[in-house]
Length: 89
Image (cartoon, rainbow, N blue to C red; front, top):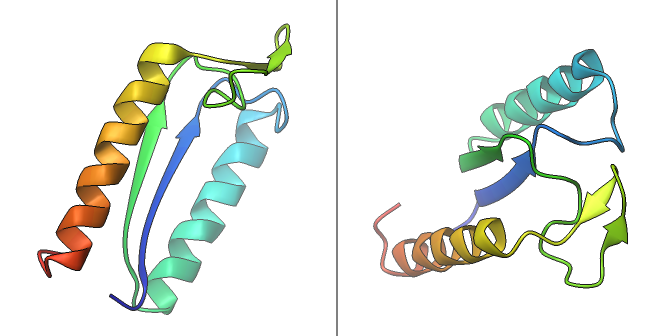
């Protein structure tokens, strides 16, 4: 299971406001994972704020809990982990 990684991100990240900054960080992540020979997956949600899995997140326009997105992320993460341990990745 060495080098397997799953990450979830959003496109409404006020923390990294500019699309160019987000693209640069995403590109750097992809290059780093590829260079390490990692098996990786990235899930991106549009229109969702930062900290969407934190029920206490409440900073208008910046961070906020989103139950449906959290539920979907957790389900996909659990499946990813199960597949990794089962040697399916």
